[in-house]
Image (cartoon, rainbow, N blue to C red; front, side, top):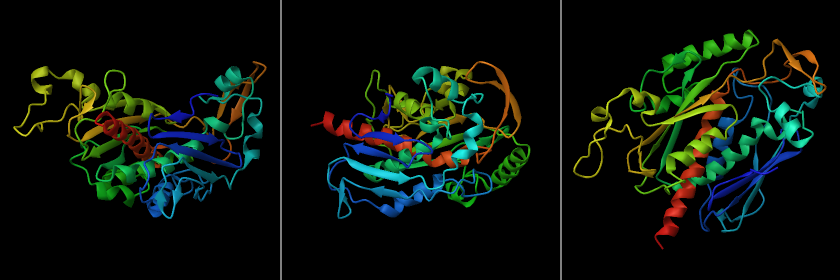
Length: 354
């Protein structure tokens, strides 16, 4: 299987399956001498882990990261940083009923056809369990970026949408509610809605908005490695993501150029920020902001028609522990992938100026 690595200089390679002994990763390219705040790593892992509230999967995993190389006496050594995260709460029997059955909208069918076999226990390598490795690596990348602030929050669940832009919401509210919405009133509505969806044995999608502040001018490598292109790739690599837009996005198509153009102030900043902090594929110093769309979780607790490995029509129903809405736990994943992109470009910028 190819495609297990992400990045050019600051590169993450992940390994492992949902119901294997462990998952883990190797971070290449992290400079030597970076002090590591292990509590900050743990905090991000706790934000992603399952079982943290009544509106997420009840699989119980501590998601403790064990660093096994590349860090000595609390600082990076410049060598590959290896880490593992044990899987301690697998219930593989929950998936025995789909051993020979393809779940609708899952990777079961395509994995089986591509590789000739598949790990049906929780989806194996296709499971979102793999994203725990991204959060661990992203926590290291955040520490490398220092003054750059990356903040993501849930801005929509189903038809419930937060009609405020990133400058109007309260970032301090994000970790005060299980939905991770940056507005207390909307958060309570979203939470009640997700609970109702769960009672129906169904799932619902949503959107996450990410804001990156204090970005230096000059990050991005045109022509094919534009900053927004790499952010888009990073976000679209996350399980269940169906869309990415930055800056004015699709709404910008409804505007005229005379209104959409970001006019300059004398210091080079802009009066508006429809560009989303990126022009010509390069950061311009303004806040970068983008939206990420997540589909409803494919496993539902309702009976559905599907096919088995023999091509016969069969009926199946989801079992086990699954998220009714993935976006609350995906917030730290979005932040982590953004951090990996920026860390890579930050290091590329340093190399280009040598």
